Image 1 (spheres, helix red, strand yellow):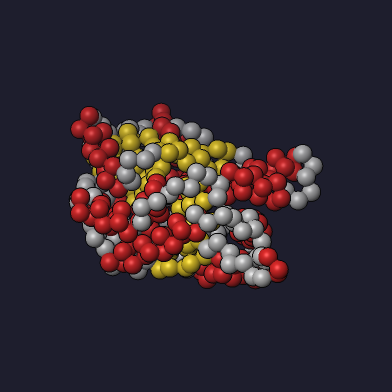
Image 2 (cartoon, rainbow, N blue to C red):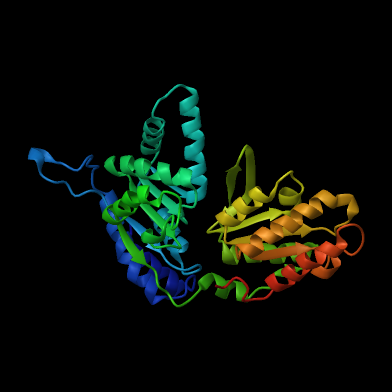
Length: 356
């Protein structure tokens, strides 16, 4: 493939990207990964006559929100000539792994990791994960053995994260059992801190309003412009699983999700579901928030719960609504309690909210 260094430079010259020295510094590492993918797979760690074989190294790119980690990984992924490749949000990937392991156990397989790893290995030589984070003990117990098998099979992994590997699953239950996975990451992946001083996502958002009212064609066009500027042209659904429920965010890319009020608050979702959403995304574009009333009390309660989850997780909110926050729920049971939600919405409308 054409080197990512050249692709990046061309994008800067066209005005598609803003030059960032911290981003430029990591381009060579992506080019190294590309060269690795051009070599034949060397399974295992021992070669001919027992000599050591250098394992294929991936890339672990970490740093603050909005520094361009996902953008660079997507640029690399889109131009990679590897035919067996996949790009997926890490949270969604782990949900798939759990589902596949459940199917394997239903068939009586004793070690469910084996067939699941084999399936992943068969489908992809290059795996690109967005936002690796480990907050669940079940994920922590699975991910070590799974990645070990992927690495041994020559799968090359590129991932973004907001955390240094040493901070993954920090203070988690039985974390000592997770430490070998951290060592594996450091040995099998190039760990790099994208330490840019610029929050590009926040800069892009600063040029936009964050709350549009009333709900009309102008608001819809403005919302679509925000999506394009912040998330890009790609739109893929993100499917999350919480307990027995499937939560679908119909449009997702680069940590940005978009859904309508009906899709998130018109469904029988609970606090745990909204916490799962808040954990999986960085920005939510929520469209078509109606005026709320006693007749739609269940939807109103879910909306309050959703806003609380987003607020506590510092998820950036872009919204279109039928009225200003203070006028969304003016009369009826629950109107008084809604005042706190209106206050939070007003706070979340500020340009710098969630920048930290």
